[in-house]
Image 1 (cartoon, rainbow, N blue to C red):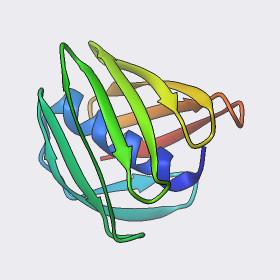
Image 2: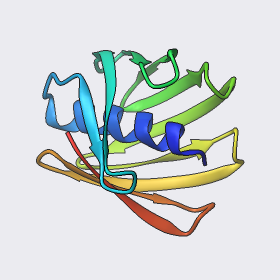
Image 3: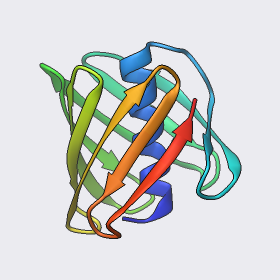
Image 4: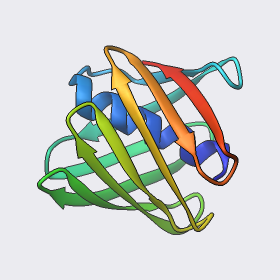
Length: 120
């Protein structure tokens, strides 16, 4: 999946699992802070990625979300299980998975077969 989708997914996962209210995430892959803000709750996700000036938004229940990324104009399915998350990116047609430990996020992208690390 494209880097922007990974960034947004990592941000949402970190906010959902940790409950921290932050407005950026650090990507160790790109070596940069990405400004993202918005609401992440158990029923609704609505975040804005300032790097592309686009929203990712959607709703869910029981830790499962159906999101729409307005940068890629495609859906993302996202599911949480404790500190772990997984899902499917319709833009790339690939799965992803990861975990959150404190303020750190590790995301595995099945398209690139690589781990991507972030810090909230």
